[in-house]
Every structure is written in structure tokens, then in C-alpha cells.
Length: 231
Ligand SMILES: Nc1ncnc2c1ncn2[C@@H]1O[C@H](COP(=O)(O)OP(=O)(O)OP(=O)(O)O)[C@@H](O)[C@H]1O
Picture 1 (cartoon, protein in one colour):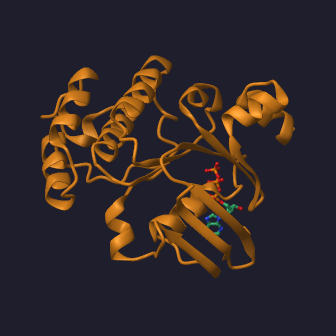
Picture 2 (picture 1 turned 30 degrees about the horizontal axis):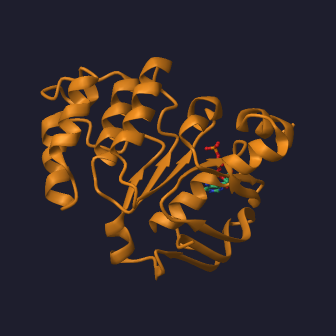
Picture 3 (picture 1 turned 120 degrees about the vertical axis):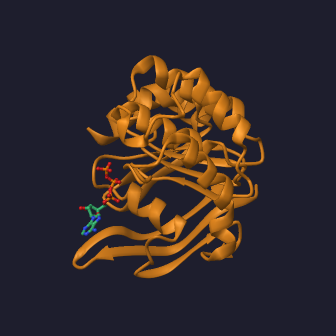
């Protein structure tokens, strides 16, 4: 199977604090993958290394066979785990910003989702509730035709009904030749859309396997298996 992310002895320390412990990991293409682990296990650090926002302390990370650089940044759509857009801009002007920045941005897809979720595109970003700000950021990230989507805690602040809408929309819109890596604590909500999971603990990769294998071998849901492994 072709790989979208390859990590070779990838290590990241912040001063004396080791966040990723020389991991070796090759992530399959064309899958939806859950990146799961307790607080502080290294999920955000891993995502930031893949995006190129952090530099490894040692080792290497390749995206679609390439070292991190301009070419890899073009094919990644990244959703950070916090607000990152200019709060004073309206949603319409943020859409324009994405059109200007990303040749693969599909305005129609974005506008359709915003309409479904009844988000007023005249409104300023700062005037939206926290949940609606999260929805806008996720919609903008998901409306690109990227090869690799890296979503850090994409649905933490939205209500359960909207979570389902968003997850269904992700599945509906996501092209089969893309890969989606979702870091989340909401395993129960997300597991229905996942093909594979990565369990991270204390900077180590504990497991990378398909949902099908885990369910077959352990006869439990991913949420139950996670609780068992991390108890
Ligand atoms: N800027 C930083 N300076 C120092 N230590 C950091 C920094 N960022 C992260 N760390 C440490 O690196 C480790 C991994 O953090 P990271 O944010 O990657 O975990 P996470 O799995 O994303 O956690 P959460 O689920 O809480 O978001 C933690 O021990 C954290 O304290």
C-alpha cells in the first residue's frame, strides 16, 4: 500500500521534555485515520511536524515521499486546534482569502456547508459563537482538494447533532484519493467514519491498525479498546 506519511526515527523534544520518542511510522494513503491518545501524548506535536510548523529534533518525516517544504505544504490542508483566522474579517472575506491562497479551494462546497449550518457569511468571525467559529474553520479546511488533511481536534466544541452533520459531510466531500488524519478525544463520535487508528502514548506509537482488525481481534468498539489500553 502507498504511504502518505513516513516517519524515520522522528524525535521532537522541547528543551528537556521529549514529546515524540524516535517514532517509526508509515501511514497508508486514502484512509480516514484517528490519531488517538491521552492529553500530552504527542498528537499535536506530530501534526505540527507533518505540517512543517515544527522542526524535528532528529530523524525525518516525509509527506507523499517528499521532505517537508513548499511542495508538501501545497498538498496539506491543516486545521489547528485553536482559532487561527483573523477575527475582524467576515466569513465572506475569509472565503475570498482561501480562494486567493489555495488554488484547490472549492467555494461552492464551502458555501453549501455554511448554508446547511445556517452560518451568516456577512457576520464577522469574532461575532460567532465558539462552536460556529470551529465549524467555519473546519468547513474552510475541508473545502480544499488536498491530498492530506490534518485535523487537530476538529469537533471538540460543537454540539452532538452538528458533530454528526460535520462527520457525515467530511465523509461525503472527502475524495477517495485523499487521506484524513483526525486527532480527537471524541472516539465514540468519530469511530464510525474511521478506517484505521493510531494510538499514541507518552511520545510512542502504541498501535497502528485497521478498525476492522481491532474489532475482529478484540470484539469491542474502538472507544472501549482505547479505555482498556489506557486505563
Ligand atoms: N511549546 C512547548 N514547550 C514545551 N513543551 C511542550 C510544548 N508543546 C508541547 N509540549 C509538551 O510536549 C508533550 C506533547 O504535547 P502535545 O501538545 O503534542 O500533546 P497532545 O497529545 O496533542 O495533547 P492534547 O490531547 O492535550 O492536545 C507534552 O508533554 C507537552 O507538555
